[in-house]
Picture (cartoon, rainbow, N blue to C red):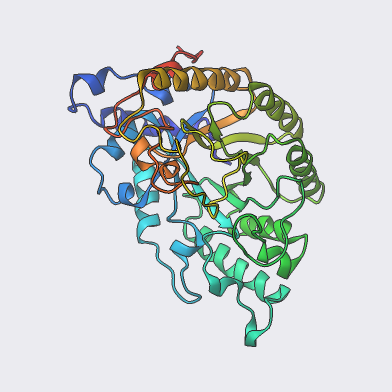
Length: 387
């Protein structure tokens, strides 16, 4: 099996020369992947426009700063398998080829999820509800085709995404929208659909690492449920290599104590831990929800878009302090953490500009809309223990 911390040696020289002529400021900027090289991989999510080279400078910045990549959307079911007899691998092929050329640890995201899955996948035969046999056959065909295409090239897969609710229960029922979204795979197959998906993914590529990925994993009920899920799969001999801990967080949630406890508890399971979708919103929360359900939409109220033209200095420093505190915890638990992946290269790319309140301007990443490092970047660099 390829080690996630040893894969990148061959790509160091190649990525090191990227952007050498981009100006003295770019050359002087520290590199996340270098300062954390002895601790964990540092990754980013690439959008389809970036993968296609249609955003000047984005790939150069990604090559300089990161040593792992995840696709934002191009490997989600709706994009790569829009119709039963139709696959579109153009963007995902480019994604994998770029990752290989730049020595990246490549992650596939995601195989089984109730969102961004086309309606045909959940449709029953002859107007009847989707049955177990048909659902399992569709998942197997999808996994065999997609994972099989990149066998030995994509190094790890988010096999199942967001299957457990905040109360620590498996999501059930037909697909819906916030707050009653369902899980049609569970409705058709039953409690073992997660087990079946992991078995299929392992069969499609026995060398690839396999992960369960979710948000709000610092909630006590989810810690208990996900721990039981992982323990149960391992007891059955099902391969599961790690847990993806989505980091869609805010300036004041989760607390540092909650993050610390999350790492401590999941660290008892003997699997790798990854922060998979890190971004820290700088905007006021419209309600008490802390999740990342993409179907959730909230109307803009007074004061909900306070920084349309840029983040003021005091907020920049607040964001920097928050990121520093978070990365200090990452360093504390670096013996458990395999990878930290930011959900986007720069602020302008971030999904949080439009979620859950459409049209807002957010500033949740380390690089601004001009792809320049923010004070948060310097704060993160300052936490590194590597030379």
